[in-house]
View 1 (cartoon, helix red, strand yellow):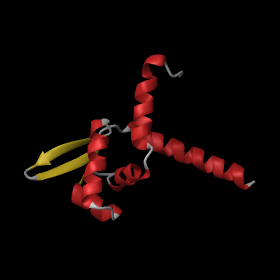
View 2: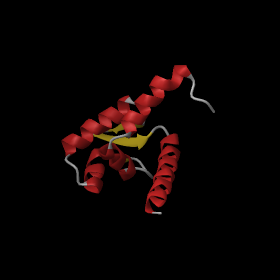
View 3: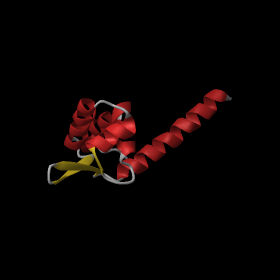
View 4: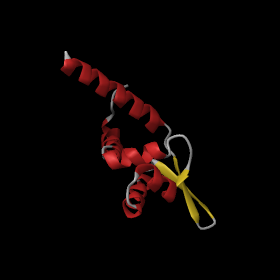
Length: 102
């Protein structure tokens, strides 16, 4: 499938949102199930303010969704293809590392 001109900017925006290691760690922290900011902070060891800021960016990019339960906000991955994309990129990174090692 070719990348159509009308999708170039959207694809670039998605890749930019995913292109920051902190955001990938946050996604990994709630990869399998939804999580609160506190649970993500505990899983990543990051500061709460930074996690909240990065979650807001991921939310505005449409990558995560949030649901309010009383005073608690639960975050979940809203774009399941992100998991597939990360798996493909990891495979590519492994292949590059093998080529560099030989």
